Length: 383
Image (cartoon, one colour):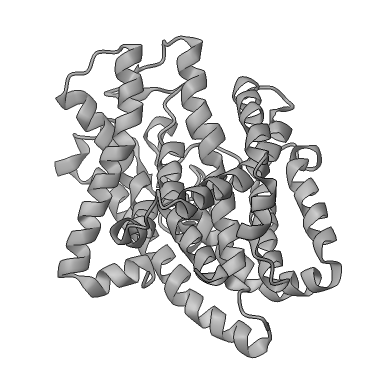
């Protein structure tokens, strides 16, 4: 198999596992448990339960979005040349693949939230009556780009909002912050190309160190931290394309990183609420990216893995939809099955709810693709 074909197959193979990881990120019930009718279940569990869930949702799964940025940067600069004509062409294509799905999915999220307020359905969502709608152009804009309790069109108590009070701004469809910031990377791509051509790997090293040490420079977090994340990993991927580096072949030289990553991941889990965890976490993500790529290549080289076309084609649909339904589906399952509040049950609940969500999303994707292919294409950016 040609080198470029193998790189493409590696990227395709990684898309679904990384999307699954994102679903688990958004179902971290280790501390808050699950709230049903104002009662939190699954909050009194032993420490090992807390650490196990955070190992998956906070440590291992956190590799997903940075690696998506890396892949996006690599693919964006894949052409040998980058000039004004190519830049304009890429901008036009990203309107279809990024901007249109971003707007549509956030409109769907607004619709979901609005349905909660209709008297016929509000009884299913305790506390929904407390939500107020403050409609204005600036609030509508914020709902797409910075949907906090104070800024968006929906103002409600913390326990009933679709987002949490956090310092990082998210769209109303939370996972799409990745698309929002990726669009910004596309816009500033001439600058990224220019600085990579002039500073080469030095730029990547400095940017990487800044990202790992971000809590030193930006102790309060905020959007700049999210921007640095996008800029570093997008640039790292772009660096490989611009310099015609086969990143799969290059990272195979560092297979031993997996042996280093394992203890780092354990340390990351055990130090989750310490001041220095942010440094361990950052280093772990970089080592984890190298390790994940090597695991994928290892499996592909030995014929132990295949790229399933349905899973590949539905990844963006899953990515965009899952957060809008996962909490409600979890509550419905919990109530219908009359699950007891025990550690074993909650751990099983944590494992299987994301899998159920995946099946629901794939089923809806297949139906939409079959009966409304044009709508499906718009929602997935033609993927």
